[in-house]
Amino acid sequence: MAAWPAIPYEAWSATCDTLHAHTQLLGKLEVALAPPEPELQHAALRLTARGWETLPLPSPNGSGAFGAALDLHAHEAIVEHVDGRIARVPLAPNRAVRDVYRDVLGAVHDFAGFVEIEPTPQETAWRTPLDEDTEHATLDVSQVADYHQAATRAALVLADLRAPYRGRSTPVNAWWGSFDLAVALFSGQAADPPSEDFIFRNSMDAQEIAVGWWPGDGRYPKPAFYAYAHPAAEGFAGANEHWNAALGEYVLDWADVVAARDPHATALEWARDVVRLGCKVCAWSPELTASVDGSPPPVS
Image (cartoon, rainbow, N blue to C red; front, side, top):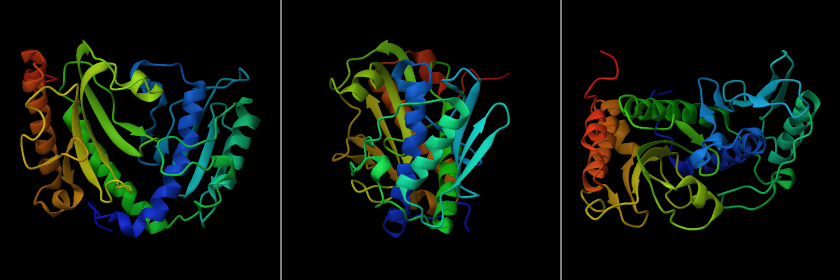
């Protein structure tokens, strides 16, 4: 298995959609239990060496805290209480989302108390509730391993991009709605959301430049890095050949990254170029702009 695997979307789309559906339950647990944060940061999951994970969540029954994870090595969902109790729910071979949802939520109820969740998936191409979904059941373990390798490489690029920035920023978030990884850098200024939709109203109320990575979907069926500014000032769109007018974002295809002599450096410099452009045309403070390139350095 290559360290920078190609993961062509067409080849693994069935597994991708099943894995995406499984992440929805973890995210909905965070929405239900985590203290609300600006820009919906409390709802974001984390990509770890194990897979997709929640942060510690308060137990509704007052027993402490618990976490949930998708272990992409053991191919199981895990519910783990701070007192040491642990439940393991198999994801493979080819278990339906409905069955995994039932077993995971049952373990949460046993360990931590009752949690009420809206089972309808968010930001997906399908609307079948998680507790009824028997369509999504494909989980090819070799494809999951390639995805995890690729996603981890992408996450390291995003972490390097964020590290020197001296303004407010997010960690590398794993977003279960859009099934992507992303960091956001903020200028410190408020912004008008693009619509009154709940997610946009709450997640895009501050001026930001976001850079992320997705493994592909029906809208853009190939893995890629992406970047956008909100609100985007005149001069941001179309500054180079990576602008995708249909998406309204800059896009760097994963295939081009993998083919580069130094994939990490190639992706990181692309991301920094877009951030520099956004800082310039959106008139961010010179101090924040300089910090993108580590001036002053984060540690001296």
